[in-house]
Image 1 (cartoon, rainbow, N blue to C red):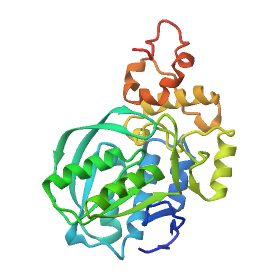
Image 2: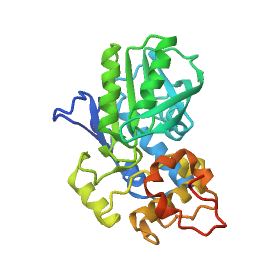
Image 3: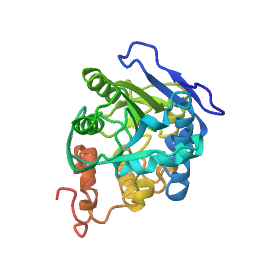
Length: 299
């Protein structure tokens, strides 16, 4: 593991959290992703690719093209652009397996996952996964399905934003199946909010550099706002949905009109946000004080 490729650094967490290979990666691209909640569209995609290239650069001394493929978790895994990052950093092709997952229930520390589609046509001893990690249930499910089709020796989880809880759960699964798991997380190992969605620098369980905590406290007026929102990747894959989810966050945290969430746009139809209902249902009474002409979040 290269710890300092160019302007990016990777620090191994060595304080007994039960995840032996968890690195916190620091670079400008990750800071842009995690501290600019107004970043959307092309700018967001470009920052994601820069961050992914840094992740791959950190793995350069361990990367073995002939025995490595991607396990892409559709559709937010698309934002990681790992094949492009590998090509740019190593000159090699990254073969791709795909799995589609859907969270059918979310609680504080877990989620129920359904799998409507898989395509595992690129077996490999090593998998690279790019995904936001909350409870870890999605990746555990994806790995379990992959193991039904192919053997596996190691997995690299690259996450712009991931929780310590998720890393622990994935590590436990990998230990049970004889798989070596390595995690590269952006800036922090986050604590997971009570709604199962919020990944905040201000969460008491978050492991990160103190100045990031100070920066987040100032940016969000002391409120534990998620560093990546409620549906990471929607910033470019469904920008209107992202703006509407930001409106919900701003309402809940009392930040309406604040610069930190200035892209917020009031939803016209709450059914469009059904997949993220668990993120805001604890505040439905507050959010449903809308004119009767608007469809209620209770639907």
